[in-house]
Image 1 (cartoon, rainbow, N blue to C red):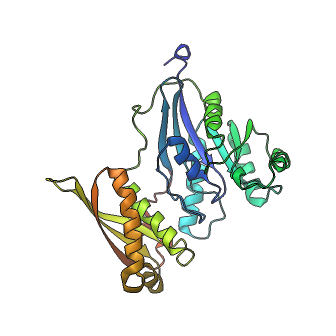
Image 2: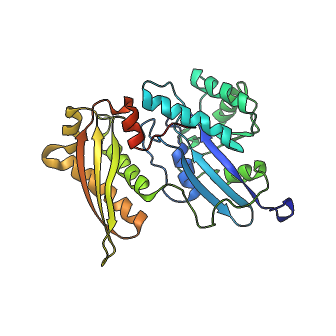
Image 3: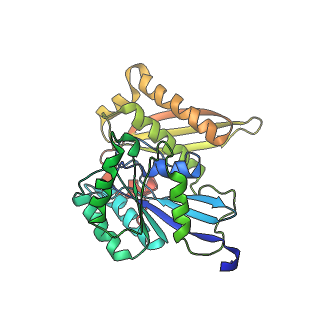
Length: 304
């Protein structure tokens, strides 16, 4: 499409340190659950491609990335490289930060990376709903202005939806004119099996609290709809690193695994718009986060 149509399209990445609300913001913009959310850092492990289409203005393709952080193992290094690699493929960068009068080494590291890519950068100061005094915002804005020359700075609350429509307006301001990349009803390029695995992992993260932080993955071993009824049979395995973790995930008399299963079932049924029969198992795979073969098996592929 040429400029006369006024239709814009392009790719936007949401970056930031772990746990600043990137997935929450993307889910809020898209209007449905795509990326899993949790109060634990490093929840998002893969680039998640979601699509927001406004037939009057244009199409935004979001790449939600793992948080940029100091890597401790192969999974960590994969996550950081996925985040940095994304910056080369986009038209606009949304950088999410928390309200703070201190920009630490992590923020300066991100500013340094952004300085090398020369793209429009919109700073979103998220979680403003947590501020006791709104007049503190000016101090926070000034803090970030000192480390990078942003094209736009906007305070927001991804959780409450505050200023989210304005973020979308700003994205359109900087997007190039262009054609639609996806049909207007496309919301994500994630395979259903992967979204189902992520939902199970999210419910496990919520239920397990701090006991088994990042050492779990989920593989969907079987997912098949019954021919005669709107019921999908799903078998999935939660993989952990230690025998002690396995016991915690199963819980006394299987109570914890049952809780994870019923919480996941509710959300998967909404996703698939039908009944599901979910069966969960737990297996120990020691040090899977440092095994290339296992990382690949769970869908964490190295970037080109």
